[in-house]
Image 1: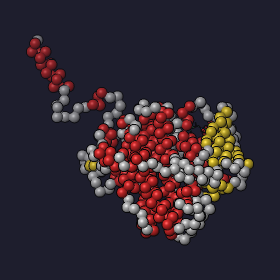
Image 2: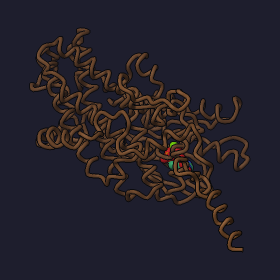
Image 3: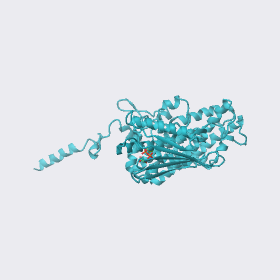
Image 4: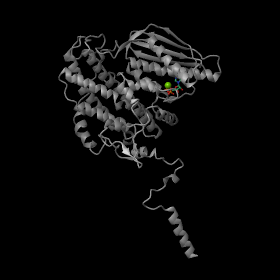
Length: 487
Ligand SMILES: Nc1ncnc2c1ncn2[C@@H]1O[C@H](COP(=O)(O)OP(=O)(O)O)[C@@H](O)[C@H]1O
Ligand SMILES: [Mg+2]
């Protein structure tokens, strides 16, 4: 009997305890599917102390950060700028001169390094598990990389130096940092899902990072624009010397946005799907100075919601045709207002998180899932694009190369190949198919509308419809106002 017992104990051990040299089979502890080969490298990557291939977030980071960022750049204050100042550089004339271009280049180089340093520092103040989030750490890496590139860029002395600098700026705007926008939002969503950071603080963080991003891009894009104006012989302009702001026809932009929405609806349903009628009234002929990409984005996102709700309501109610959409344009000296009225039944549930980047956990998971499905955002690697010469691409057991992250510059070839357009990432984001509901349209639009001294509100009458009101400040009115995160 004793013998039998001993044998059975030995037998038990030999079956249930794997050899110490073998990988334990963890899958039996988890109800979810085992991690497959395809996913394994990503999981591994999230477990490392430093991202593989990172040039900045590594063992030396602390020391470099202390001497260069904290003890040098953080002591310098960013300069609030006005739209007017951006354009004129140290004198009052509207003429574009060689010296102005050079001064502008010098300013941009130093200012961008300082502004990046301050944003890096604010990311460093976050709890470690937030900034070390898979997505945030890539935005951090990219910010550090930009900081370093501006910091080390040689002083601009001549007009030729500046031409080179403008090319450098164009490259920066188009390369991997075009991913920062989705990375920041995806990072926020992950932090919500994992309960890592309070939602209100996360919204505040994201809004401030986005505002700062808009300002930096404006500074850079304005410099690129005045540089190319100067070299092409155009030496005078009305509001600002570059061409990033343009006179926009409200009606044209609305019609363009509605065309895009109609196309999306047809893609989503079928070609002959009934479409809502669109009426425009009020200041129909309004033309105003604005940043074309921002206007396109704002109207695009808002109309998308309106069209989507209207068509869904038409289907739900089994109506003869979709209810019409009416846009009223109003203006005074200070602002322009667009009231987009629909009769799509209003906002179904009283969702407090409608303006939040984080949302409820359920909605955050849905959004995140859709982000992962966005075409062009799947197979990526910031580190591959950053440092193509190092060993950022690892090789799996079967000798196949794999990449470390799940994001890719949105159609990278387009970004580098096609004619340079301002704010490509934003427009790309807006052009996503209706299938991908990201749940951040209103949150983003609010940041952009507030940036331009306006706001965005929703007035929903459940059972009837919604008025979405977009107000934008008149730029000419505030062109002389000195603002830090608003220019
Ligand atoms: N005009 C509208 N009518 C009804 N619901 C709306 C309207 N505009 C926005 N919503 C609601 O607000 C939600 C959030 O909108 P948004 O932030 O643009 O994210 P998404 O459109 O990706 O869901 C929508 O899912 C929808 O439920
Ligand atoms: Mg939307």
